[in-house]
Image (cartoon, rainbow, N blue to C red):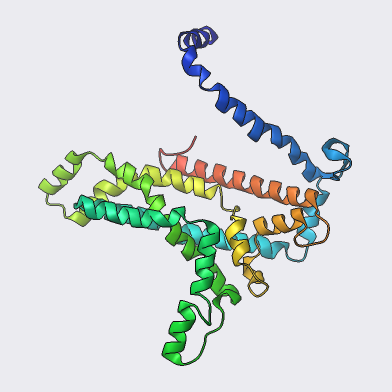
Length: 307
């Protein structure tokens, strides 16, 4: 086997040369930084460095669970992430199936362009739009409410319950068009003969979507769901941090924002690098367990899995 591999490399060495730069990048930026994970098990100080800091084992992780709001932070993270998956995962699939039914190419391309555009809007701009629209005084929400009721409403971003819905649905609006690209690509590979046979058998358009198109994109959807499961505990801190305030902190404080505040000292006077690293490592381990579990389940229930 080794001789065959060496012979293949020798015959196609030019192609293998293209792997050198990506391999170097992977080693330098993915594997070498992993040595810093040990900060989670040390009482890290910049003066002593990684190797000179005192080893404390799992003390930092236990310290996180001993904090008064640790369970609330984990609960908020899971709530927002699962809500985002349940509400947002089916929408790109449905949109792709519906858009695939459009026969007018110009109309189809126009819809695609319009729905793709929000993806390229930066997070800061999106949050700025949310703050402007939801402003209870001068925003669209406040102006319409005042015009209809004669009084100004309360600030929706100050309501912890409303915050979750604003965060999730604004993200769905921004990403559902871009997320449908994968499913549209999968639908383009559907054999036209399957549709022709279904039409001959008298199948309606809805029946063809249900029995021809959907089964063809189901493996792709399964892979995407497995990948989403691996990010259940990872809620990006940028958007939440920008939308966060003292009034909605009960539902908006998640692991990523907590790690940011602890690690950079935004939530305290002194940065705690060891604690933030321990929380981040715990987060990554949970994500690894989830993606392995979901992958094993899908492999048993179907023939589709990541590995």
